[in-house]
Amino acid sequence: MKIAFRSVIFLALGIVLLTACNPVKKLQNQERMVQLQSVVDSYRKLMRWGYFDQAVQYLKVQEGQVVVPDLEKLARYKVTNYSIAEQVISESEFEAIVIAYIDFYSVDTGIAGSVRDEQLWWFDPETKRWSLGSPMVNFADYVRQPESRGSGDRRVESIGP
Image (cartoon, rainbow, N blue to C red; front, side):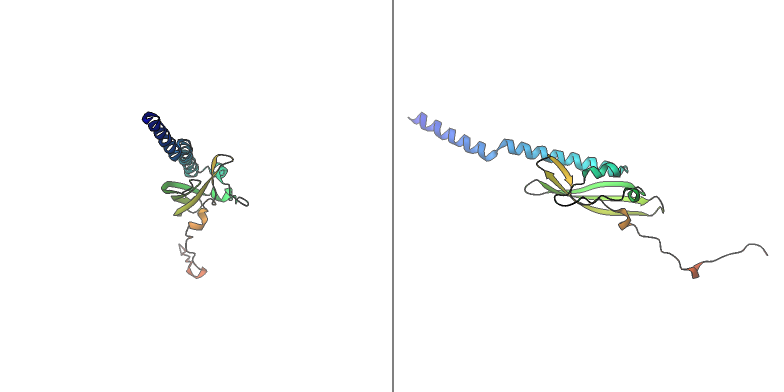
């Protein structure tokens, strides 16, 4: 009788432990986090090397219309450094905030700038993909325009008699 009672206790304890651990759910969460790392790294590389037209494929909002950036305007900037500073995963593990620091310059003016880009990434359980829910960075918003001189500041020098 003692053996049967112990068996029942061990069986019940084993079921409780397996239910509490839920290894399948943990494995799914782990796979989702690995996929997030991969997607963020791919997006970083596309942005770093100026493949903005391909980076757009990651844009998808949860509700409403995607705001697609003007790719001709984006092409007027070159990224010199793109680093991921931080990733914060939500408790549900279906959303993440990614903080990126981007250094860039305008090919038209040569003016350099930098931006702290806070990105919202979200996981779609139907497609099983991570998407960028926030707009792509608009470099023009972060470039200081050179101060223009008024017409009174122009100097004309003549050479000769």
